[in-house]
Amino acid sequence: MRFQFLIFALAALVFGTVRPVYAEDTVSGPVYLVTYFEVAPTAAQQAAALARQYAETSRKEDGNSGFEVFEEINRPARFAILEAWRDKQASDAHNKGAAATAFRDKVQPLMIGGFGVRPHSALAVAAPRGQPSPEAVYVLTHVDVFPMHKDQAVELVKAQADAARKDDDNLRYDVVQWDGHPNHFTLVEVWRDRKGFDANLTTPHNKEFRDKLTPLEGALYDERLYQLVR
Image (spheres, rainbow, N blue to C red):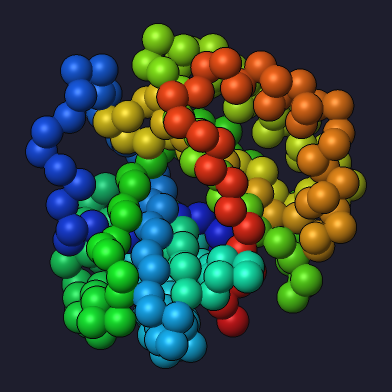
């Protein structure tokens, strides 16, 4: 089964050569990429069309096991791309290839700011539980804890993923860990619809997760809701 909903390239943009002292290289197997970008509101439809074509082309490339594009609900000029690649070699080949280059060249004139590219490795990844409908809600959350709390946060996000997957309306809940920044995580959720997502917010396991995570955080819990660009 193709690894849907996860996670993305554009890494011809260099991830940076200067890393904090606590940085660790973690990606030695499959590579998951999360990319955020924003365009001018008047260019949202044009950017969506470019991103849709880019995703369709990229899924056919060697080593790709998932390539999805999302637009933020209520802010359709803000996009996220999620990709999964067999390994770093496949990811790098894609990032240097014609499809990625053409996409960047076409969308950059429409953008506000640059591409935010975050390479990850799997921490808690499972097969999806069902096929999302057009009403599905996709959630990407960036979790940032102080480096000293990394190990505690790892256990918390893994436990949350295990618990959330048992909820009736959950179709996917994955956790990936940022390469070079092991105290940063991306939570990838898919819920049957908005009602299911809202119901999850007040479940005992979610409230316990947030209560325990908050004192560890180095930045605000950045949770964003998306819909699939079709």
